[in-house]
Image (cartoon, rainbow, N blue to C red; front, side):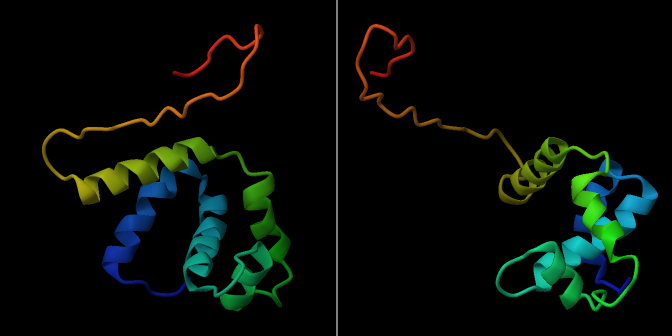
Length: 114
């Protein structure tokens, strides 16, 4: 694993509880590759930018996304919490929800908009 600035490691370490140790090592590689990769961010391009495309165990990194037991919803929750902490560090936060107007008609539509 490359040596990273402390601030960057602080951001990444928030996601460590989502993974077991072996999966976390591969997830770090994917995360750093996603930041560095230009163009499409496929797993193969992430591994290529990290210099791991020639390794024989590259399939283990693919398995982090397909087979490892981690929750993308929990990851999104952590990411949202970090974003809120960065944008709104103190005080209340007001959220607004835009409910689009439903333009369909009929007897079968129960939850029709305004």
